[in-house]
Image (cartoon, rainbow, N blue to C red; front, side, top):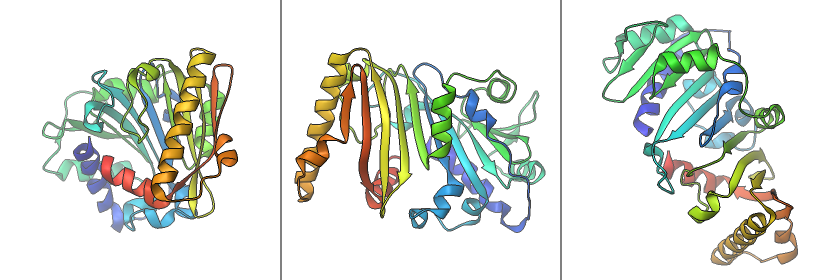
Length: 284
């Protein structure tokens, strides 16, 4: 998946000589998701204005992008499933002209014009197809492009609940998954049998004092599984703090992971910019 996304990024960077004003809407995000699928959306425009802006590459692509949304579909139930084990479908929104991007794909030796409609281009070596459904939006997928286009741009709204979507759109970055069969390597060593007891999971990343702040909710199948996961996450956090040599404030830590009935809540989990950068560099 890393090579597939890199190809799109390289092509988009070449837009640097153009000036364009239409940014494209983000309604395709409303149609992403489904059982077992991971949906990730990144508010690039907000990140550029936040304290985390130094983490972003200083290039023309970043200056043009407003949002990137990706839907990952697992190809097996292996856990954790490395990122190259997921089918990827996503959209990039921003100052992107259909004429400019189409021209770049035509001349890119890795891509050839695909048969059928809507117009798109495919790379067998990368296992990726890409096209421009409308000005301001690039659609890319390792699956069937026509099916992805129909679902995300002509389909009905909504697998992800409206309230959840609203929270995702206001965060710097967010992740949602319903009924997971596996997860990408996110840095949490959660047993597979616990993953099977998750009904849905929402993680929201906000900007704090020189760090990201993680919040969210995990709906489990029952109270016992919520209690078990809460204890596990608290223990993992304590171990991490001890390894780092930081001061251990048990009272403060107890408020980061809490649960009520089958709902586990995450609040005030501080993630340094360096830690997030290392995770992204390692995995993506």
